[in-house]
Amino acid sequence: MPSRLCSATLLGIDAREVEIEADIARGIKSCVTVVGLPDTAVKESRERVKSAVANSGFVFPDQIVTVNLAPADLRKEGSTLDLPIAMAILMADRQVIPVEGPRRLLAGELSLDGTVKPVPGILSMALLARERGFDQILVPAANAAEAALVEGLEVIPVSTLSETCAFLAGRIALLPALHQPLQDADTPFALDFKEVRGQALAKRALEIAAAGGHHVLMVGPPGTGKSLLAARMPSILPPMTMDEAIEATRIHSCAGLLPADEALLRRRPFRSPHHTVSYAGMTGGGQNIQPGEVSMAHQGVLFLDEMTEFRRDVLEALRQPLEDGRVTITRAAQSLTFPCAFLLLAAMNPCPCGYLGHPARPCRCTPNQVRQYQGRISGPLLDRVDLTVEVPALSYEEMDAPEGEEGSGAIRDRVIGARKRQAERFRRSQVRINGRMGPSQIQKHCALEPEGRGLLKSAVDRFSLSGRGMHRILKTARTIADLDGAQAIGASHIAEALQFRFSRYFES
Image (cartoon, rainbow, N blue to C red; front, side, top):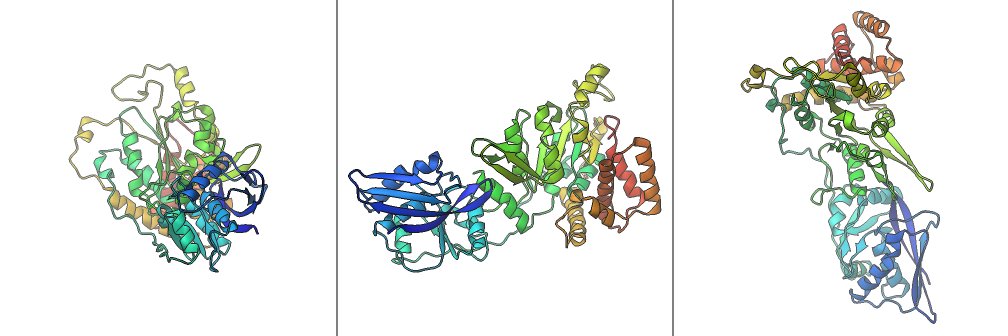
């Protein structure tokens, strides 16, 4: 009589239910066959399961063992199915007779001695289990805290195959993992804006960006503090909600990059890929499609230092994620979509030598070299950047100024206040921040005072702004008004938004 168990496999960052059937038949020659589109790791589970069963005090059947993974047209990847495959075989051989209990889903990798090892993507599997009406999920003990983030699901941590068998047979009881609600990280940030001297305009641009989720490009000579400012951006971002934290954690978990001591990402991700990153490394891909840097930065910041040094195709690949907040990876066998609602923070020099416009050091570049260098950032990509800010060289007096700069805590308080106003504004919408508003939300929520409307019209006529460019200005002005606590967008808000839209290097 075949045995049946339920487990899950990952497809991108989503989990799909897998039914595992095991059947044992007599034959001249013993063998183990796994069918149902298993990948190499799943096929290798036969050897891991054999050793784990033998080293856990059981006898592996010396007969024809057939394991079916349904649905048959869904490719199964990874080592997550080791534990349920072993249990299905032992149940089919009547070495383990489970007692009646709640609907269960099992997941875990087996080592040769029967230890249950952690696997990536447990949070997605727990969410799937709750969605499909399972009452209980058995997971590796090291993954229990992660799975326990899902409310309404009993999470049972297991450490060995023999312990799992004893629990299912009703011989022992295991305590479920406790659900841990999200708490804001109480440890202070190591980097603080009070350490940055001068650069008030750049700090203001980053405050606006953090408040409304706007993309920023910093332009300035080497050594003026662009990287210094970017590294402190996380210290002024608002804390994540539980939904945002789970979304970000799912991606890191499925990529196998969730820190061992963290079941939940409590602070927004900050990703800073090297300029040699490949197209697949940035957007996602590979033989078994994995999320890229844009998805790893979901709900956080993607920082591109020396933006002009990145490959052209890598930069152009950012256009869809910046606009839609998701990226679709299409291969011959499958197509997967990953979320990537990130804040782009980029930095670049104004020219190849870096000293165009420097007050003391002359630029050695020809006009043609400057045009080619700045042309590495295409117009369509630049058009998706809300704030372009110059980070100029500082004088000795500015660099040697005594302490007294505003700290990250005060800036963050203003950012949180602006985010609360946006949350109230968009409470009945899928949009959560000003930077993600669509045309209908802009028309509804970006009411202009007469002076502001006249100033915006003059800018559109003078600079021949596109519809996207005008919308970017309106969204930025809406955030500036939120920071001021204003209901309507005034002329001063439009003027400040225009100031960050245009620079002597770029006009878009």
